[in-house]
Length: 369
Image 1 (cartoon, rainbow, N blue to C red):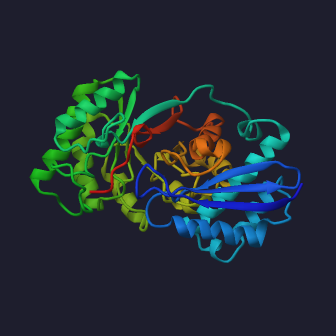
Image 2 (cartoon, rainbow, N blue to C red):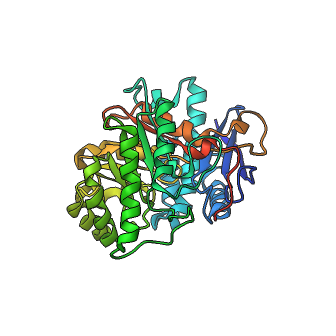
Image 3 (cartoon, rainbow, N blue to C red):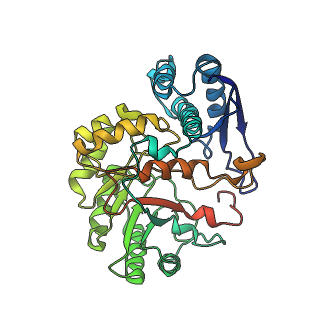
């Protein structure tokens, strides 16, 4: 079998002006195709991701045997810029690698999880993510603490036993906050504290709460808030600080008594190495659209146990109504990739967690305020 053609789709969608999924479809001489997704649908890098796939395809894929996933991953990783890392080059590698695994599974007529060792989990626990934007088909930019309690209660009423919220990304009026740094004034501290407090009161003690702050905080701010939130027995504090200085994460980990989750913006096993060696993360969260597809995470998961961490793969929320024919129009490529890996993960927490993003429920995504 050989790769004969690679299609790249840099899409506009109807769900919002800032959502541009980048998909790849690899064709073979035996008529089997595979699909993958670059993890750069939002932000300002989708065009770069599409260009990266094109460059890698031209240099590494045409006429290659798609069944040789390990060899092709190594070939792509050995290209000049891949040795320096970053989301664009590894986003391109991730999309291609996923499409190659898709071809391999179809050719052997088995699910991808069988090729990864088979199921270790028959079910996946799903959490309701990003309730600060409302839970349900209508967007609600939550400002008052009571708004957060109402949205959390909606998710629990639907059967979710874990919710994820960012209690700091929106200000008291429901507008986006700028990056929060340094010692916060009491007015802000009280607002962020009371949002989590009302959620806990609304859902009770048996529901898990994950706090995500999207790396918006400085280490000082993360410690200030983390110490206040400790009393609410939250499952994880996700992305408390940015990844450019590992010592910031160490400072937070040593001063906050909430387990730390992070990793969406770390790439390949080498990006995670120092975090695991220093035991700074309790839950690693590789984004399979950026971390290296399926090939590298399956290697990386084997070293997670040595770092005494849990594992959950992360994915983008949805792709709604892309202008593509056939099955790709369903737009569930990235979640499907994550589910295949989570089903055979040995290091997911108690009951394996899988993200169900609130944006998936929305009829329409508004432009950023």
